[in-house]
Length: 277
Image 1: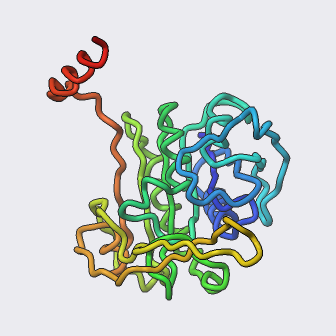
Image 2 (image 1 turned 180 degrees about the vertical axis):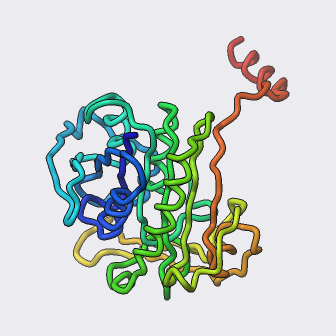
């Protein structure tokens, strides 16, 4: 089985390196290939970028203490996955594992996360994926963490949870393509309370409340953006954010966009007809 490992924090991310080593320890005969952005692409979602401007370049890389084949791409994680799916790095992949992201991707963060975006891109080619993220102590589970807050991050706990989930899929891969959104508390593995299937919440425990423009001194017409965080919310335990906040691993499945019957849009059709007349 061929397993693609990627992330949105770049090839030098500690979380990526820990995750790759965990995937190399899976039981069975598996080929691990790492294809990650050459730099930070957090918040890129499933974006591919403007290829005619990027002029994509692929460079060989290496992961410390691991002999997995590794490459970098000068583009977002979605582009890494697209090139992988199209055969740039050998035969078809059977599973994508993306992460470990510092800062859990819960609530509406699933719309913007590059960690999840890699798996969404893989699903276009009918490849299942696991997006692995971890809460950051002292910051809450939402958003991307600053470097000084992740110095003592419990990476191995998230890697072990990712390994268990990946092993379950390679041992018995579902017939239908799935995306597992895995969010892990920032705790030693023996302090994690367990696993829960969780609903994707509508919001994270804390989000940006306001954005204000502040003039940049010496530059006419230029501004920086000052953002203020809202109050921390206590979210229901059945949601992904609430689950992680309570010390459990959150397991959520991201469903595909369904093709349903067209809703009643008679009023829009009338307006269009009048415009065309």
